[in-house]
Structures are given as C-alpha cells and as structure tokens.
Length: 436
Image 1 (cartoon, rainbow, N blue to C red):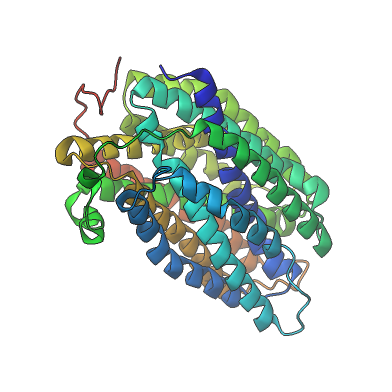
Image 2 (cartoon, rainbow, N blue to C red; image 1 turned 90 degrees about the vertical axis):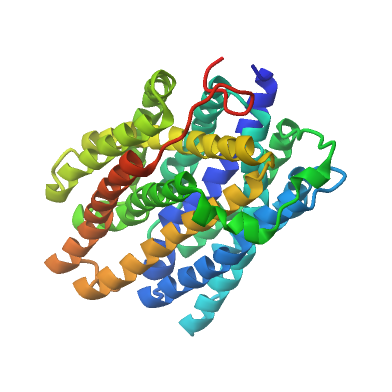
C-alpha cells in the first residue's frame, strides 16, 4: 500500500479541481445571463469557442507531457508553471469590467475562459495523469478515489453550500469577491498537493515515444476507451445540468431565495459522503463497470420526483437521494480510466496517461458545450426571458426539461452502452492488479 501521507497530499488536489470548475458550473451561466443580462445565445457561443479550443489543447498538451519529459519529470513542472495563470484567470472571470455593449462582455468571457482552460488543463491534467502511475492496485486506487471524492465534496461544500451565503442575487460584486477568494485558496492548495505528486524516474525515455497521430488513433482502435469517453461525458453532462440549472429551478419554479441552495446542496453532499463507503465496497466486490451501472440507475431514478414539485414540497429531502447515486459516479470514473490505461500499457509497453486524460478532458468539455447548446435552444423554444421575475408555464417546462429530462434520457443511453460494449480483461499483473 502507498504511504498514507502521499495518498493524502496527492488526493488533496481534488479540492482545487472541483472547487474552480464546480463553482463555475453552478454560477457562471446564471451570473452572465441573469445578472449581467447577456443573451443566452452569446453565452452559448462563448462556451462553443471554449469547447473548440479544448478539441486542440487537451489531447495536444497530454501528448506533449508524455512525449517530451523534462529532467524534472513529465507532469510536475507543468503544474508549477501554470498554477498562477489558472487561478488569476479564474478570478478575472468573475470581475469583468462594466461594458455597456454586451458584446465586449462576451469577448471578456471568451478570453478569460481560454486562459483559464489552458491553466486548468496543464495543472489538473498533469496531476490526474499521475494517478495510474503512482497507484497500481485496485485497493490503493479505491482508497485514493474515495479520498479524492472527500476532498471534492469539501470543495463542493465551499462552492455550493458556502457560496450562497456570500454570493447574493442582484449583487454583482459579491461574485467577484468570492471568485477571488477561491482563486487564492486554490493557489495554496496546489502548493501543498505538489508534495504528494512524486513521479517515477524514467530510465529509458525513448521507450515512451509515440506520435500524436498514434495517440489520437486510440479513439479508433480502443473500443473500451471510446465507450468510456461517451458514458463519462454523459455522466458529467447529467451532473452539470443539475448544477447549472438548479438556480433557475429554485428561482423561477420553486420561487425561493438563494438560501434554499444552502440546504439543498448540504443534503446532496451529505448523502454523497455517507454513500462513499458503500460504493467503494460494491466496487471491490464487483468491478467499476457494475458500480457505474447501479449508480447511474440510482441517479436517474432520484430525479423523477422533481418533475412534479411545487414550492411547498420537501425539496431538501428528495434532493438528498440525488447524492446517493452521485457518490458512485464520482468514485468510479477514475477507476475505469485507470484500468483502461493499464490495459493499454500491458499491450503496448508505453505509458500514455497524458493522451488518455487529455482526450477525456476534451470530452468533458463537450459535455459543457452540450449544456450550453441545450440551454440556448430550449430557452429559445420555451420563451425564457432573463429580464422577467416570473416565467411562463412553457418557460418553466423548459427549465425542467433541461435539469431533469435530458439527464435521465442520456443516463439511460450510458447504461446501455457500458453494459453492451465495455469489456476490460481483469488480469492479475503488475499494471492491472485488481486484487492484492
């Protein structure tokens, strides 16, 4: 088993990874569309540009890390170089200058997103790619994955539960103050986490060489990886839809203040924490594939009651059950990608974590693009108007479709895909040790 201090320090990076992205996921769409009065189509276009940029930078930077190691390592130097651009650009996302012309606000958002994404890719991708290299057994990986989710949940508490106490509807400045506070906290967290990111020395770097074309060919030649990319994108989309649309659901359907988000997110995250040991046990008794299927079913079923909720119904109690299925999905995706990397190494003798995690990062951004596209198209269809305090019945239906129906339908698709097409050969060897 890996050293406990190494596990703890490495896992702590999940705090920053979740903190920045989840606060963005939960508040950016509401901030730019409702608070800054940006047209939904402009916001969707900004996310589209972001996704196109990701189609280049995630796989490319992953390949560069694999292909051109430095004397100080393949991953850690990139984390050190890009941690400041990552955190500074995040703070600037929430403090745009006051532009009368909303097209300038759009340009500001695009510019800051591109800088932020470059930093996020280099820091978080480098850290994530170390996971299968540092931790080789399923036991270590399950522990690390569970601990990473604990740090992620702590971050979610800050981003979702603490945030409504500081970020107020109608107070644009409160978003900026909280955004910069998160940026500073993240810098400190990254510095501490670096002490747990100790790379293995590569004695023969020439054996690690492969072309970018070979790396991208994984999409064509590795069926398990392709299936994983699609189902992970769907899981991220489903979770992201709930996160980004709940402020709209809370304000326009439940007609409640932002204080409700504190109680709801507390219930969801509390149930997630309590459920983590159960899903770790299920995974160790079965396999990551089974955990993904069961947790996806639980997640989808938990959303059904929200279709018929009214302001007087116990929303907090029902939302708590969302956290049960969410816990399984949070744990299992890292384990699935790690076993895919191991299988590739056992076949080809080349460690290509960077390109695997880079391509996965691109597909995650596609999930964000899907969110932006559905928000723009459904909002236009339903007649959603950010300038109105109350929406029409069709406008409310559009919010429910985005937050509930789309995630449920896509989760059903992911269950079918993984059941029929995902098959990992679980052999007991050094790089695919599923038992000790």
